[in-house]
Length: 305
Image 1: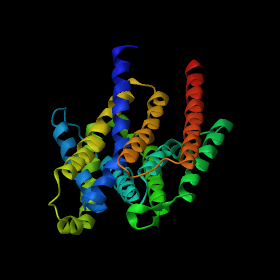
Image 2: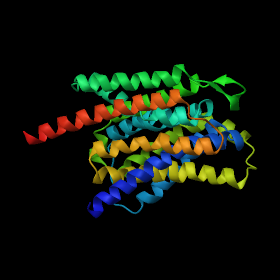
Image 3: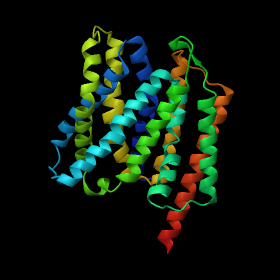
Image 4: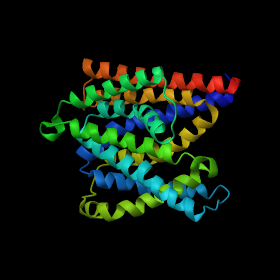
């Protein structure tokens, strides 16, 4: 294995490991640090926006046209505001393990949306993969247990919010994929996070102002990880990995997320990994695998023509 691919593998492992940690760490901040979901989402957005702007100072400035600015605004609503907002609220109401397993369904949702909006062909193997993934996601949502951290309430609304977060991000990938070819990742991210901050601050300001920020060092460290590692760092590593690995190889690292989340959540006493969750995870993983393998075979056939 050459050094470039090794860097790509390490980058994808690091990005997905940090995303896997996001579920238990965010839950820790909200339940043990008394920080609300609105506040945590806003801290994540404004912190990442500042870091992306600082990082962009070290690259050549890019001019973004007015029409593309509007596209970036709409993209930020899907990829950041709805995606990250629903994810954080979903984790608050759900299980860290459930949330991380559901996030792996995003490629399946993207495939369905691609068929609807981009008229991408779906063969039998892809249909079987979508069906398996859908059954697995339904098993998690419909079999959602009570949540001990919410006084016995159900996980189902949290699971549905996390699922909607994946839908929102998949829609962003399908509708705005051409932006990635026109501008650098830093240019795209700095504007998307800036627009997201402007869109969310009117709703989150009241909660942020009312929050008692006399929090412990552990919660501060957890928030710093959510902003620096789980958002800025993971997005940067994702770009490094995508440039060095084939999409199917990079996508397989999604499987790391529920493994990391499960280990950490169980060690922290936040969750347990039941047989039903194991079966659901296997179904979702099998569905994603069937879809990615089918897409890879189609790509190889097209290249050989």
